[in-house]
Length: 481
Image (cartoon, rainbow, N blue to C red):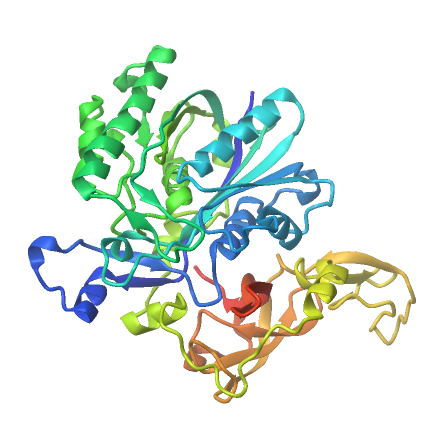
């Protein structure tokens, strides 16, 4: 039996009300307004950092040395030539022998990566493959896409042991359909007319893929517990399921009014929400959209009860903050350039060399732990810091990224540049030992207290626009519920 063995997701802390966007642009015609809010990545988040967060959620309790492959799907990868999946694998502290690959350029890349992982496990070439899908897309200010695009990520682990949802079959369609596109020179997506996308795209491709899957495996609508598919048109979303013969209770919520259209991650995030509520024996159909459609049939097993301690979708939806200002949103997305001041930081030309040599302790947040007395240290050291021990060169690797800590001290710096001032940083004492200073984010200075619990979050440390370089590191954030 091959299928999903674990799931995870990530939704950024911040949301922006669609009404906030309308008010900033002077659009106050009630007949044309979309309801709800959308998720907004912080200024130091992108598709890669969100993929890491979703993967950490998915791998909770799983031995990372057993991951054989990592497939990353996104249309907004930070790099066009440099493997983004390799950066994620390093941040997750996976072994170097892991197979990594990027899936890109189409919104159905997430399900394409999932089917490829299924094929790899089914063939025996891999035992456990992690699939993460994430997008952080930009719509031109004042345009429809700005209202609908949300940020988020999903991660699914595929294997042949302890399967929680077996993959029983697939059906794929490929069409060169020009509805949304972005060339090398474009910062914002381009799009064709809405009725074209709704009537010729979503309303035909998704039903064709789902109908093909059901015919292939002799299924009727009443055999299915939940049907999962994306659609950026709320009315059309309900109509697709109804026309296929599904009752409203069988159609999984679209998440559009609470998160937005998250691109490649969208169908997988809705699937994670369905798995959170699924029970043994449920059959689930998940379908994607983008230059055609992929549809998959899943059957939930009794192992679904073993999945615990996941933030997934539910907890992320319950943990949020209103961004408040449209100007802050466009600043975060670097649509509105701002002066970094005299203390604005840049990436030094030697940092890429250092990043390679020290990749485990910089990207993987790996330190050392004394074999003799068990004292952890970060960065890795050759001499034990315990004055009663002092062992030399008797160290094991020790990962801090999945450890929680407490804020020992902190400060707010109004002189250092930050897109969301003031810049905040503090000393973190890790549970189990170890201490280091980190930037803090997803918080306000007044909300911090000495001793408060924090966790580590993989973030973009520098974004050098001149060199087109992104440098990542870990930051501390207050623990989300």
